[in-house]
Length: 112
Image (cartoon, rainbow, N blue to C red):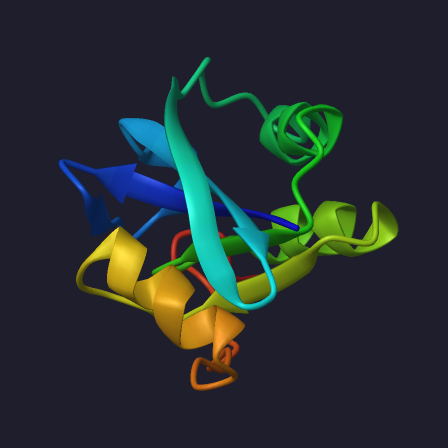
């Protein structure tokens, strides 16, 4: 499974669309087996969910995200976990061990 984290300097960012990069973790049997950093190619409405889907991402972790992006991720079968902060790697470790749940936090600048 591939888990992407909207990140900046190894930390989960508050808004996924404006992150510096996506840390993508490959997991097997609830363990991280590899990771890579993919620079954010730019924030355009609807683009990033499709971009990450194209990379084979199954789950996205972020501090917050607009409702439209959540909807597009859901259309592609990608689980959205929001309301997270701290270390990107620790967030993924918590997620794969079943100890990280989404708070449903939506970015206020996108809430309508």
